[in-house]
Amino acid sequence: MKRSEVSQAQERAAQMLESSGIVLTEEEIRHIEVAGFRLGQLDVQGLELVTYVNNDRYCAKELVLFPRQTCPEHLHPPVGEDPGKMETFRCRSGKVFLYVEGEATLNLNAVIPAGSEAYYSVFHEIELHPGEQYTINPGIKHWFQAGEDGAVVSEFSSTSRDEYDLFTDPRIARVPLVDEDE
Image 1 (cartoon, helix red, strand yellow):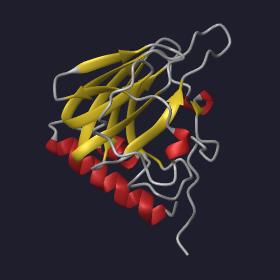
Image 2 (cartoon, rainbow, N blue to C red):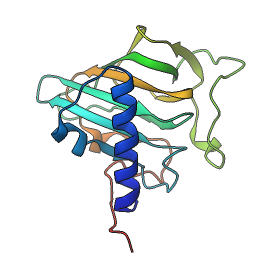
Image 3 (tube, helix red, strand yellow):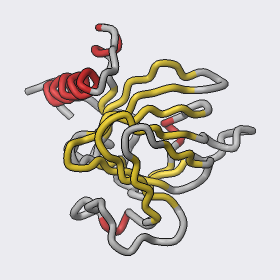
Image 4 (cartoon, rainbow, N blue to C red):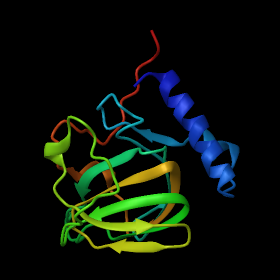
């Protein structure tokens, strides 16, 4: 991703957080993480994050999804003695379609990103509206997509080790790579 793309995504995410009633410091706004997963299609498969705290006991984040933006299918595996990340998603604004292992929903509300269909395998749908939440246990494959207006989701979890996340799509790299504009 180009530095200008990252800056634009950070500004857009900050606006969505503000309109959701979430107040950030200037430093937090400058450090909004933009995860494009190195797929080159941020608005389709990507995620914007603010991490408030992440230590050896717990983690708290805000996740921002632009309209119909998808966080690709992945799971949080065991790391050493840790069984893997357990996370609770609480929808703050917009609508989120969360997919986990279980009986497949017949008519999905999400749109699987074109060209990536082979990398989505779990289709049990949980629809989250503001004030609703869902907890995902360690080792469970999941993915999620915002509705038409985008979404803001608070994540409360055990320690986050994003670099160990296992994505179904082998093209994905979780750690961002930012190029300077040409």
